[in-house]
Image (cartoon, rainbow, N blue to C red; front, side):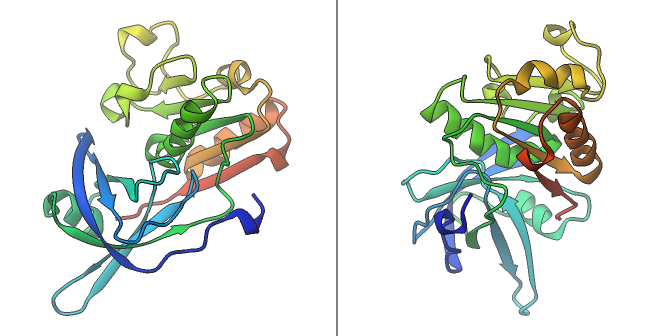
Length: 239
């Protein structure tokens, strides 16, 4: 996306937590109301900053799961990590009505405008920015505009499970699959999984851990998608 179409990074502001929704045993979605609404694109992220009474600060980046909208609210899905000081605080201490210091939106490469055919491939929590893209596709173009392929270990690890249905979603289970997915053996994504969904994709977005992103993007190129049409975002530990 050309730089002139990427919204500027907004100021630090204190957003109010208006809802908290459990996603899995280790992940929660926080809906935040921004006092100064700022436009964002599907695929961007915000920084959450915590300040202790003694002045110590810690901050982490979290992708926005909501599509671009004018409500002045965003959703950030946070996976709790072992010894994660920010994710642990959010999970253990934050309740509806609290405020969080946030800044964004940030990012201009891994964004999708919602106007061209695309395929989204996510591993684990890498599905978060892709969910913003899928929700945008469903709102603007329907199931023919984009397709999400997500890889998870088990059903207990599947974020946004209620929305992971329909012809525009494929879920790959790598450890244990539900009876409804018995037609495919558990295991990592293969080129046979990708070929049916790539279709006429103009751009492929891959998001997940570094090993996942490298393996999945290599499969995409092997399936015939030009390397320059593949956009990758790697997720590392962000506690």
